[in-house]
Length: 338
Image (cartoon, rainbow, N blue to C red; front, side, top):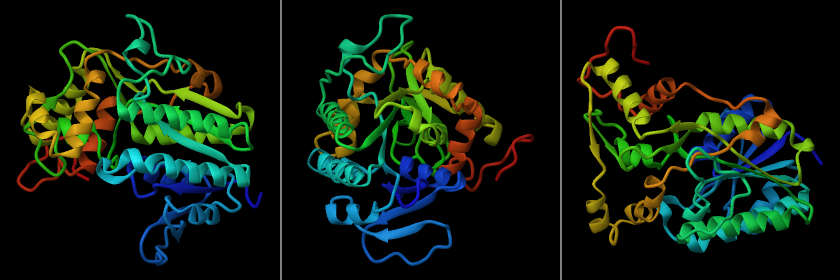
């Protein structure tokens, strides 16, 4: 192995990929990243940017040469052709990891769990819960993990960290930025998709990336195929996240936003024409049933889970999305603008 702290990040311009890239670099890793299109010019950011495509096995094999870790955080933009592209991209990563004896890091989700896996009241969802999804996207997630498990018997190592819905200042497309509020606009109302009183799992993206970097530091002590759940921010009644957004917004603007129900009826009407709404509607069951995740295994390995306080995380998210810096709004005392 050329360098045990050399890592290739696939999907480096996306939400979780970009956050992993920044945190790995800060932790002293030598970071490479693929970029489609013209050969990247030097950016002075300490990252080795390579021209390539995750759909090209030749590109991925070449980029991963000498790497100890491959972060697989690549997804087709806007859910376009998701079913046709996701597995071929993963197969290329697996081939490269086997060739290099590298560890694959996959940011996981709860999409691969169907309603039968949902825990009873006051219980938590464990890593080994049955995976019998009812959705197309969930079935692809199950197949991804199955292929990774097989790869772990053929020379690769695998680290999967499952988390709830992402939010963060650079998190990309997610429920927070596409459903609850709209990036770049004043927060005058919050549209909440969940049923009243039903809990929901959220994960602050910088905490997720920090956890994965910490696990990489101890990867030699982990099984060849390791899965972990993060507890993240558990909104036990559907009011904790909307309450934090309202508090942060009122402090910044002096005006509290109203909380309204997400217009699922409108999403249903528009879903045949808008791919993003179609995908959001398919996962609606996750807003109707509580799905708290058990992080016992994670705590056993790391001792604690990275956890930014909710109001602090929401403030950073809204600032990063441009919601608190729109012209014409005033800043309240005690919360200076950045």
